[in-house]
Length: 168
Image 1 (cartoon, rainbow, N blue to C red):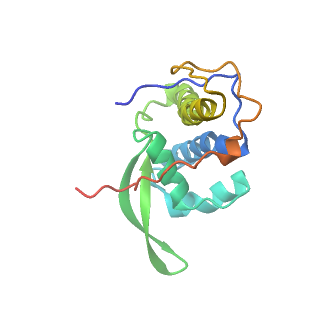
Image 2: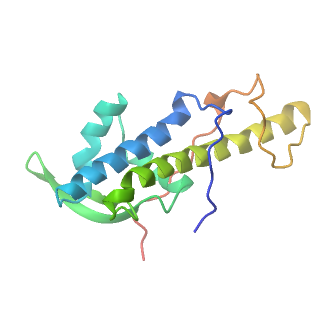
Image 3: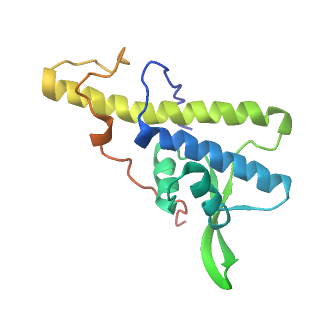
């Protein structure tokens, strides 16, 4: 189990980076809906809804990036769906610990804060490297009070992709 990361409200994320908590929140919500219908939560079945809600395309690589920053966020297994008469390889998504409906709202909120914190950690590391390069300031792992005015979140490299299905 990886270390937990709590988000800090004084370090806002721009649109590029706030996508991850919105994606997690919406995937979680759609998985809750699927579970309520006793159906698996299949990526290719929820993809169009995600795109409509988020107002952008959501390819599978967005989930792979989420898998990099938080490998334990979901449990994945291979699945096949039939869409428009064709068989398509997809991924079934399970939210660990979602079984208890009384605690599901708290769980989903905690998960959203966790992913925000993990994305912030990615940016804090990039910010620290930026400060070392440009001002020779070493924060020594401390959380900054604010982003440096010349730090551009948009220029930070995207999170690498980790396949959802691991070969055993």
